[in-house]
Length: 412
Image 1 (cartoon, one colour):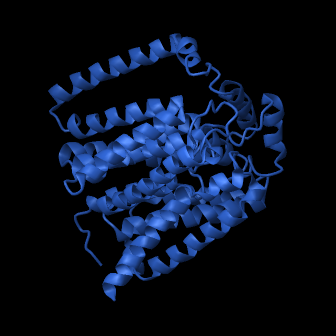
Image 2: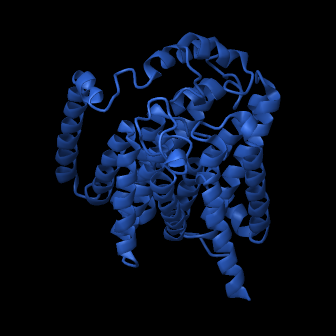
Image 3: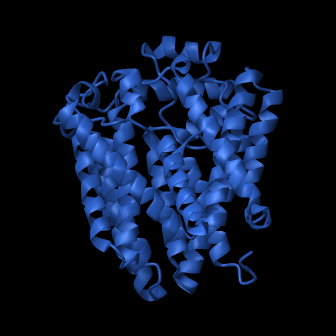
């Protein structure tokens, strides 16, 4: 009976991850277009189920969950700012509703960290992404009316089971990071991990998302740097990092100078699909409420007069700022930015120190994932997003890393 319950819990965990990542319901409901607020009834129901399941599971191990809960205060400080923002929000009802969803999402990340080891967590993500990859190929090849196109600039790009090609690309850049990490750190079923890594690369390629393709290459290089170079002696590490940084800056400068020619070959231009016009307008709106922002989830809420000003200025229906850091600033102001940056920076530097002191997979993964967070939020928004797979991984990565280096940690 015990084995059955453990297996059932694992299946529930993978199912919840699938709901947070994206299901085949997306293409059927949207018919190739981004989901609007009014179309999300069924998804709210599914997310609510995950909150209920998570609360039930953590009550079974409340002592250990309480211990894990106290390992990082900056995550809870950021969650607290989101809650407090309802007092100055331009749309308090939306802020409260989305805060509850964010809290439920955060608790699921807490549950993962308190229940499973890092490799167990990432294996669950790998199973979920493997299922998603198969369905993406199925929809793109056999049901192209749902799995191909949908975006204005899609150019027959794949989107699989996801609302847009950019979501497909971003999801499997993350998938590539997970599969590569498992392939390099785990001997068990290594063939599956390598297959997952190359499959992720194929899906990123067919998404025709230039940003995702670049991030795929950077994430691969970042893993090699973090796992092979950071633990070297300073007299070796510093010259290597200096050389790699110089090459990276030179390539970036070359890309900027040649951007029109490069992006033109894939049907794009240096406006990055409207972002160059969007970001200056967003910064103007930030300047109106720079310290506390407009409230968590309020600025881009349905019927928001503030976001309508942006939409009118850029002449396209922007669902967000297409930059996670700008959206965080819009939501919580400099207060939220400060709390996030301090927590992020402390954990990032701590992970580097611990890798050099005693290399552990948890801290290597934390650095790889933090790199993904930075890259993915430069042109898209997933930072501090409710019902987001990326936020779940952010929470679980930090708590798992904290647990792995606590000398006084005991299993409860």
